[in-house]
Length: 396
Image (cartoon, rainbow, N blue to C red; front, side, top):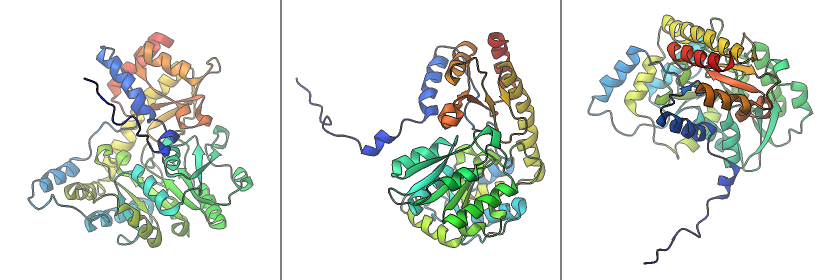
């Protein structure tokens, strides 16, 4: 009996052609096949914290999930307890005053925030400034949404900070958003007060909204915690994302926030409220609890733990012949490959298939990352030591 293919004339939307499957999704399938063959690949690629949240956080989630009345739809704006905790977090760590009722919007992670902010501020054809190298989602979501992407360079010799002379020389007509991310991912470049002041000045003079992604300011940071909102007047022209994924060991919980002026929050809420139906109430209450974690918890989880792993990552970099800035922050180590390699994949593929260690090639973050690799610190010390041992056997 002849069968018909009833969808042979159906075609996807044009936007599908503008993006590819996320690198870690496709490469993850290859790694999964290798593991199925018994090769036991150690992943030092993805920045997914491997330690749990604080005990108090988990206790609040479990206690509230048992309540009969805890399982209904929740307001998109977030419950008052969570918004107040978020405002308290910004006051405690950054010294920034935020009105919890009007200047904060809880998010289901920063990826969601990139989508909602772009939809709220940009029309099809508007321009956005995207860093090169930078978080791939800034590029992919803007392609999907039909904005024009203008890349601006981040270079090692400038500390991975924007070149404002280059920016001023660009045609900025029609630019609505500039995406920034400090401490920087993937490069580990540090934020400075001067950088944030320059960004706010640039935004005000050109009527551009700076959206600063700030999830890494607690990782390997024993000094001052910086926020672009510390700059006077920043709230008028800046939006800042902050995520619990990295700083509170909660990547799978999908809780983050954006902070800005009340007008921007209203615009973004119009979009968000038509897309989701709020976050599980016990999860919001647990997140509110997590924001009150002690200073010692933050020091142990975000500094001491990652410092011990960072030492191993630096030894891996050295074994591979890569150079790196020892002052970089965040939960990754970014290093430049030796000139002897034709391209970065020549190195990363050898590391994967001969040493059975998965590390990230820098080209996925943009052309300025094409001769760099990134090592994640989100693996137990024992796994990182084993990765180092395997790499030494191949490259030592």
